[in-house]
Amino acid sequence: MEPKIVAFCCKWCSSAGADLAGTSRMKYPPNIRIIRVMCSGRIEPSYILRALELGADGVIVTGCHLGDCHYIAGNEQAKKRVEMTTELLETMGIDPRRLRLEWISASEGARFASVMTDFVEEIKELGPSPLGGVS
Amino acid sequence: MTAVDDLIRDAGAYYCIECGKCTTVCPIANANPEFAPRLIVVKAMAGIANVALEPDIWRCMTCETCSEMCPYNVLYSEFIRGLRAEAVSTGIVPVCSQHDLMQTMMRIMATPGIEQNRLGWVTPDLKIADKGEVFYFTGCLPQMSTIFRDQEDVNLLGIAQSAVKIFNRAGITPVVSNQEVCCGHDLNWTGDEVNFEKLMRINLDLIKKSGAAKVVFTCAECLRTFEIDYQDIAGDLDYELLHISEFVDDLVAEGKITFDGVEEKVTYHDPCRLGRHLGIYDAPRNVIGAIEGMDLIEMERTREKSACCGVSAWLTCDSIAKEMQLARMMEAVGTGGDKLITSCPKCQIHLRCAISEEMPIEREKADIPIEDFTILVANSIKAGA
Image (tube, rainbow over all chains, first blue to last red; front, side, top):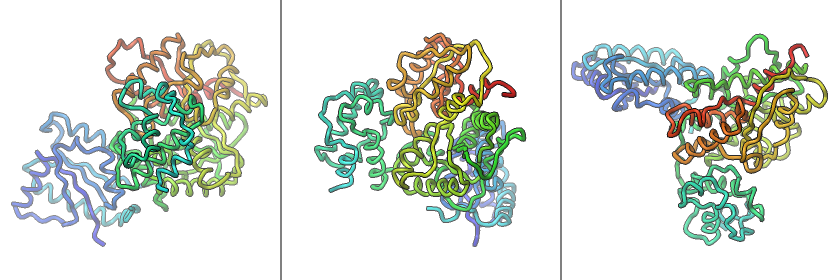
């Protein structure tokens, strides 16, 4: 079974990075389902848990590099929230490696492809999520 | 008979004489004239459309101030709980604070076969066991402590640690389990009966296997859920369910623990689940009274008339809740006490939230340290006794 991975990408940097990866014909595994959001700071811990609950094997949150946020400090909020969610996942017994936070700028198409490739490989090693197929 | 008819019968709503006392005392109706508990009952009985689809059923805090006043003992919160389950079965999705984070977490916990790591708070000096007479049910303290880690001074893990300290001092090694899951209180009150039952089965199996004769709780909501909701579905449980205040009250009476004297004035906030739902008012007061030099000053709204912390099941966090929390904090400051004591972790979270940000009033008027009952007791126990 191929893993299902949800990638939250911010509009201003990371999803532009994804576009660049695409228009430059760079390859990365098709396991990634991109959800574009206005800012990585928009991603609430509950979205991450909900994705896992609904059967995602991994969740990756991507945003502008620290200091580059289009909304000044949204990515700093994202960092705080992802750190909190990581701790929560650990307590709940879900491998925290299933959640990752990465900064990818609009000019880093190659980085987008390599980060996604790396994450998919890591999730494949971890195997299917224990929550797979939960109603 | 429709599902709503069944609910009307089970909650005894047919006895409603439309006296309106419920609406008079309802803290929400006081702040929002459009909301009236009586109206919901009346609408349900008149068979007006499907009352489960009314948005007002999600606004009730189920604090049971109304039931306390009702001359015919209509089980109002039970009625609301049933309506919510009915609403969810028709496809309505409740809107909870933190975007449903707590409920999602609880639903994940209901998945069998996940090995949790929830015992990170058990420090080497605390003695716990896998099997034994007394089971200590921690509830969601480990998870909540992560979720609310930004709240200053909120020491949720300290509650669990203090509880084990109290047991150990009394010569008891409590069972604390890594397999325990959330009691499901919040799912039950937001209409998710399916996952609530799954959680219940996991917990009941676990406690049965531990061979415990007593289960002790530090959370008022967990105790209510076991005492009322679990026994409602699973039948009578063959072990004793106790709040930590009752347990300590017994220990004090048996002379198994004694307290150090402190010169302190405190006030006590009755959580709705412990007070009005379960009728436990005296145990915590007895224990506070047993601490030499500790002076308990009651607030104006106390015991049966205790104010609500404003939020239950993460449903009703809004401007009305904030007002209620501030009013409660001002009342606590008004007693002239040094601390506000409560025995519900969630009351603590909600009341603290109101004073953690900018306030519409001067800070001194509402700022008073809040401490959990269990922590207060553990810190006051005489060393070596």
